[in-house]
Image 1: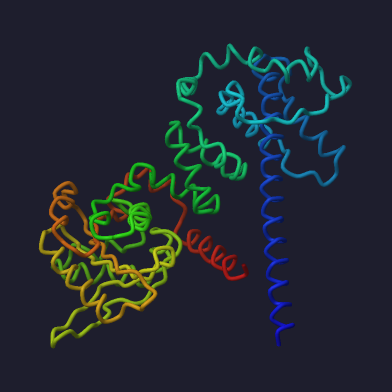
Image 2: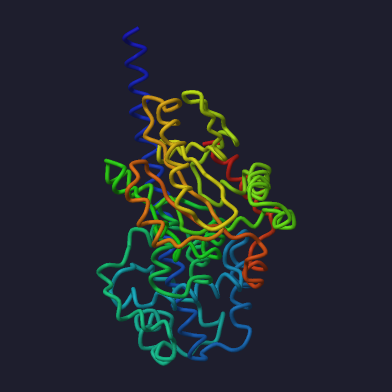
Length: 404
């Protein structure tokens, strides 16, 4: 028996070493790829912006590359242009000696007509692109203290994630935020684009809450703060059913839509949520309590109560939510779980006032608002993928999680 136990320990040690080595190798491959694309982007930028190459050069280069390297993927003409964008948008990193870049082999003169040797352009790219850089608004980023730049996160995310961030987020602080988000939560490119489209940057960590005052472990408190936004888009709610009933019935309609689209709801709030039920009933001292939506979050290791309101925030909602959390804590909390959290999800709220009032409550809670499709900017609504596509992405990501 002891030999078997020892073998199990040995397998565990070796397996851990293998997995850690594979993770390091994958990380190194990603960094090497980013450096390669950065260097190619520099080369393409220098030649195209200075008019060293004629019209159609990028297409010709791409075609010949694939002819000489059969099976080569990722070097189409659009991909080469993305590499140029990648270099141009982050060229200030090179001037601050942050990103190591690969030295590419010189392209034979017979292949393309160029006025400079590749190595000369590679070594003097800052001079070659100076005129172009002076005209770009992005040059204001040079004023940023690059010692605070998140280099680890920059090197950890894929090229396709970088391109999604550069395409949709224009301000430096936003780009850094989404780099850190991608590194921390490992979203698919589609999920990352969705987060940017919904403007996660301006809503993350903004939800009024009392977590720091009610969650003893400050790390847990900050984790909870980062988990929620102050506003959510519930574009899968059937708005045609709203406004035809009294407020209580409308709330029932919202809840019903969420239950029938629970996968979309979970995608809206992020990974780690497990749906436990709607209208969950608890009897305490002869009094009935009905929780609108009950979830468990693995990252927080605690249940999360969502109390739905179709109107504007009212102080009385906090008292109702506090009672639910107290009952849930007494009746259904497991020994290994943290205390439950409650979220009031309403149409509108004076968030400063909500944050002020809830400080006197001893249960951890927050107040967030939501929008339905009828409240959205038409242009933003067009930019969002259809509900069926979101569900397909979620199902694919779920299958990947199950196979890990």
